[in-house]
Length: 416
Image (tube, rainbow, N blue to C red; front, side, top):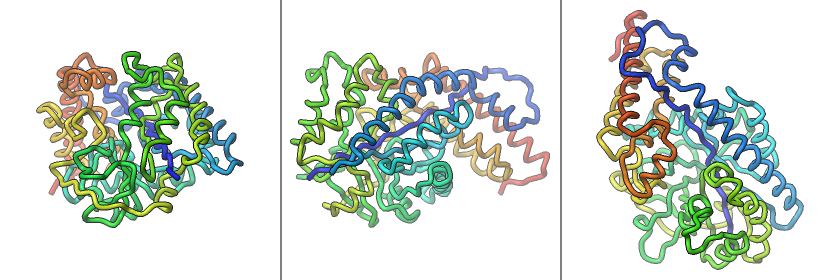
């Protein structure tokens, strides 16, 4: 029997404010002042409420109904989630009712939580030691335990970014498995993404996203030019039933439902019909990631060296979505250089603000790719263009850098 393993990523960034080239004179800032100075609270609340009403609340209700419907049957409906700490902060800040909706869903016993970095950041790429990365992973782990009562044992890095070194770090943190993209360049010969593997240098398992079947829902569902449109639950279930392998990992943004694919597209009708159509096939069942690890052994090793790092973004499936041009690299370097002075302050508010700058979305908005990939980047960006976004991000970082320097000077702290 083949396992169908859904993995949903729920995340929204705190989008940066348009600071301007000549910000007002610097002064001592409280956390609230700094947050309002650097992040666009009006826009962030607006986007959160829009996505909550279009996606989180109706999708949570739909999943809860499906879980209850199949809970007493021989084959339950189960899924897994990762919820970024940044989104968790927004739920606490803007609408705790949305948080309660997720709690109700996660309390069913049919949803497994997967860990990630609290800030949905690029910290795994900072350096070989990955100390900042480890701190953010531990913070997310604690939040999942404290808010939802689960202790995740499976990890997915921001945007599925993966290489051998990241896998080794995750193994040392005690996780049993890590997700990444099932791209062809890391699969040789007979290999497919529909089996469990292990890294060359670690003993944890690798779960690979079946990107074709995942993107049929996430990207192509409402594409009328697609030769398989319209995608029905019956058709999709038939594709799964004829797909060879042990586990089909269907990983996508949770915002697929109602936000990226609007309600008018029929995406919620599809979601509500899909579990029954899948379970009509006797060779299919739903599984959580941990259940997959308990059912199937590894089928070989995956070798992804540092300069072949993979992700789930764009055609290249590498890090170019965030670090592919000089603007992205420049702001990334500035963020990294702030680590020592910011941490030297030992001020949790300054450290928190700095970590919010690390959220991958800020770098994603600065991408200058063209064609379909460029359209996707433009869809998510809130600045007019990446060049304006770069100037604004650098202005914010320089302003923050001055505040950090003032704090260090005032408190007579030296940076070694």
